[in-house]
Image (cartoon, rainbow, N blue to C red; front, side):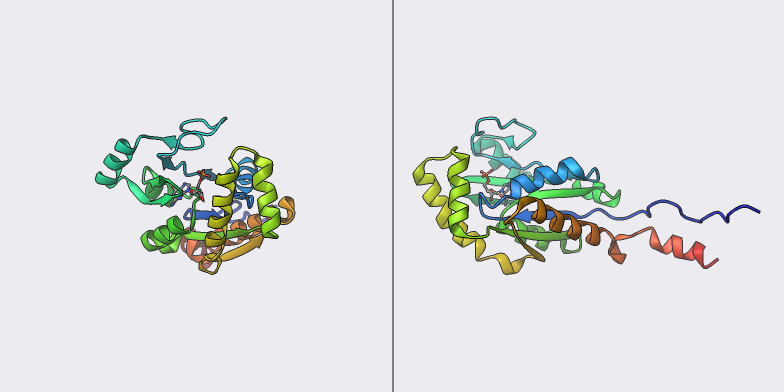
Length: 216
Ligand code: 5GP
């Protein structure tokens, strides 16, 4: 007689989740998002729509869908957004697209959005949201990182520092908070959160049939 055949050898079916990374500009969420997308094949970016002009190197449809004010108005009118908000002098929104169907099929989505978007997503779909707030180790370090990016003028950086304080004041609205002192360590913590949340009993939709079969 050989080994008994396991009744389940792979992963069980599960529902996808909406994974939010928020932080003030410069605290590292974009780097962390890129690392996550590169290393984790089960999560993909929800590409936002924005009225702000592209920065050098940004590609339409990859970093954002860049649209005119008129097009954004039309999308609001058509109820095409999961959520949208004014951030700085522009508007940003999450297109509904295929998100709802994809969640049922176990696809996870990454959201690089601010606290306003996070609150709206919670209101629309609390069960699927997992939110992580990334804190900088200090405000001095945050300013240093913004200056190192060298894509914005001094006035814009001062403005972003003011807004950073306001963004940080929302830290307690998040499920998890991670300090980004060392980006690799921070990434490991973020990944642990994602892995654990994927294993939540309520997300493992394949458990009921599995246990039924297990118990004969
Ligand atoms: P940036 O212009 O630097 O790419 O983004 C500015 C801010 O807009 C960031 O804090 C970012 O998280 C936020 N943001 C980007 N996309 C969305 C979105 O779809 N919805 C909301 N509410 N905020 C967004």
